Image 1 (tube, rainbow, N blue to C red):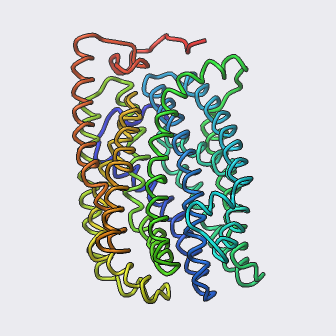
Image 2 (image 1 turned 180 degrees about the vertical axis):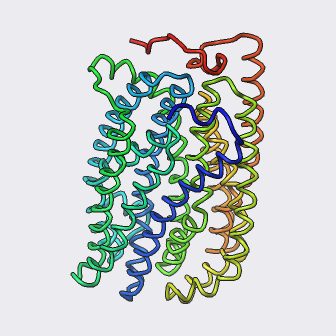
Amino acid sequence: MRAVFLRGSTMRHVVVMTSASTVGLLAMFAVDMVDMYFLTLLGEQELAAAVGFAGTLLFFLVSVSIGLQIALGALVARAEGSHRRDLASRYCSSAMTFNFLVAAVISAIGWFNLPGLLGLLGAKGLTLEYAQSYAGILLPSMPILVLGMSAATGVRALGDARRSMWATVLGSLVNAVLDPLFIFTFDWGLEGAALASVVARLVVLVVAWHALAVVHKLPCRITRDQFLADLKPIMAIAGPAVLTNIATPIGGSFVLITMSRYGDSAVAGAAIMGRITPLAMAAVFALSGAIGPIVGQNAGAGRYDRVRSTLASAASFNVIYVAMVWLLMWLAADFIAGAFSASGLARELIVFYCHFLVGAFVFNGLLFVSNASFNNLHHAHWATAFNFGRALLGTIPAVYLGAHWYGPRGVMAGEAVGSMLFGSLAIVAAFALVSRLEREQKSVPLDPLANAAVPVGVPVNREPPL
């Protein structure tokens, strides 16, 4: 399977890749929501709030790992598009090794500083104890999750969305089966939910590694010198990509800290929506990972007309999907609040979000699509700038003012407003970047691995830097 995205309808590729990725994300997000649902059945509001605090901290670490995976996917996809399977194999092995080492170091730092980090987010009392117990079990398994996600990214970069999807689906199914067993049958409660997730992460790693190493035979043996030499191209993408991704949890942390002023009920309402929204918007989240390989392969082959078409297809898909979800969540707002036994302020916030804020997610989708194109067009620092712009100039000021003027509702509205300006600017910049790169290619043909192209099918005899 080589460079499968260089021909055929870009909309079809976007839909197929996004659909496959969405199935995997739906399974994963559904388990997160089921976790929250089962924990609310235990009748302690502090449990839902604890998962909210722990989830925000863990999301920060997952965001770092996603940034690392972006580098792996971009390098493998561009090498594949340039008909260099040997280079794709080497980049895959080097990037997976690097990702594991970084994840191990960050997880260790987080685990040894867990009480202080959760306290900074606003957790206290019994909620802090619950959050520490939950995150304390999940943090040591973070390197396993990163390896599994990295392997799935490598499979997806080759165009095999189906096997990448199955890694996530099977892991999520295992989690869904073990959740009620560990939480209720064994009476392990919150710790049972965390342990079920650890087992699921092991399953994801096994399935994804089988697809990557056994089916596609992508990883290869690398020497120490090769690994050190590959760090430069890896870090050229991973550095800005990590910064890009941690901007979101930075903004999210400020939202949580601000919301915690209104008590555990407000945090619980926000935490419940924090589980429902990713499930409802799974296809939007899947878009960024889905179009990355399509953009990467076509950029590697110099087909910038197809890169532009891919962006347009992804943006159109995003708008239509969000509009449909908004309608459904508007109609189901009361049902959602009742299903999670939400009352008081928690119920009020859930209904308010479903009625008025869901539609703003279209701008998050535009930002996701733009960032994926930046990362695969060797302009990852643009994604960093837009994400930090959204967090520091959009989310934080809007949340601060929203809280001051309208209380907890203003906090949720401020987070939505923060994405509008920067999502719009990012998609405009993405199209402008593609046009600029196309003009540069026409004036001075360059090596495809240096961000331009040669005609499709012409082999490139450039060795990786040593």
